[in-house]
Length: 68
Image (cartoon, rainbow, N blue to C red; front, top):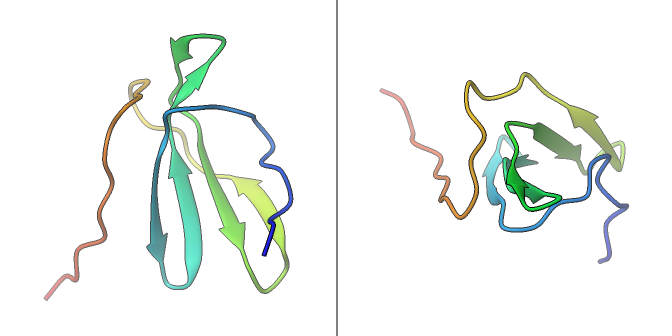
């Protein structure tokens, strides 16, 4: 399924799924690392901007860890 476009177009970002939502972090916007975080909610089929990271990142990985 093709998702609606993110609010901020980017390349080389990280992504992970948390509680059924897709979080996309950082990436490059105009060749510069960004600290933006966006979340896709499949129930509403919408993207929202979340709290930004402290530093811009690109070419990074993301994981979800189960906390005990």
